Length: 348
Image (cartoon, rainbow, N blue to C red; front, side, top):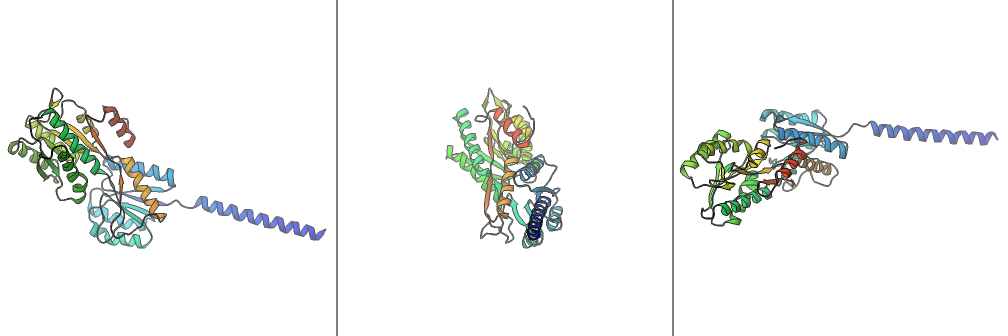
C-alpha cells in the first residue's frame, strides 16, 4: 500500500510539474513583446501620410498583432537619414522607408538589414545596390484612364478642335514617368492618335512654377486644351493661371477651353471636380488605407520568408489607385471612397 501511495504521489507531482511548465510557457508566450514596424513618412503633418500611418497601425495590430511606429521625416533629408539609424536603436523588426537621400541612408539601412530587420521601400527603388522590395500605387492604370477620358470628352464637346495636350510636373523622375506621364500620353493617343503632344514641362519647383508655366502656355500656345497637372499643389498654380486668363470653366456643362486632370484628389479637388462650372474634371486618387494594407502585408510576407529581402532586381508590389472622373464617377461614389480611405465624414 505504501508503494502504491508513493507511486500516486510521484504521478501527481509529475502532473503538477507538467501543468506548471505549460502554464509558464503560455504566460511567456502571452507576455512576449509584439513585433514592431518602423513606418517612415516624409511629412507626418500631411493629411495623406497621417491617414496612411493611422491605417497601417490599425491594420497591422488587427491582422498580425504587430505594433507600428511613425518615423516622421519632417520634410528634411537629414532627419530622414537620422531616422534610419533609429531602426536598430529602437529595436524595430521591420521597416518601410520613405527617404530623400538614399546614398546618405545606405550605411544605416545596410546595418539594419545585416542585423535581421526586414526593410521595404515606398514609391520607388531604394537603389545604392540594395535591391529591396518596392511598394507603390498602381498609378499607371488610373493615369491612362484619365488620359483617355479627357481626350474622349474633349472630342465630344469640341469635335472641330484638335487635341493639344501638355503635362506639368516631373519630366525626369522615373516613377512619375512610368506611373503618370507615359500612361496619360498613351490614354490620350488611344483616343486620338493625331493629338499634339507638348510633352512634360518641369513644374517641380511648386505651385508658383506651375502657375508661370500655365500662364506662358495660355499666351504662347493658347490652343492647349488637355492638361495633366501631376500633383495637387501644382494644380493650384495651374488653375490660378487659367482663371487669370479667363479660362478654367465650362459653359452650359461643356468643355470650351480645356479639361484638367490632377493627382491626389483631396477635398479641395473633389469640390472642384464636381463643380459643373470648373474645368478640373478628374484626379488620380491615392488611397491611404489600401496603400498601407499592402505595405503591411508585404512586410509580413518578408518576415515569413515568402518575399526575398534582396533580389537581382527590386521586386515591385502595387497598391490600388482610383481615377475619379466627373463623367464616370458619381459624386456619391467619390465621397464614399474618400471617407472610407481617410476615415472621414467629408461631404460636398
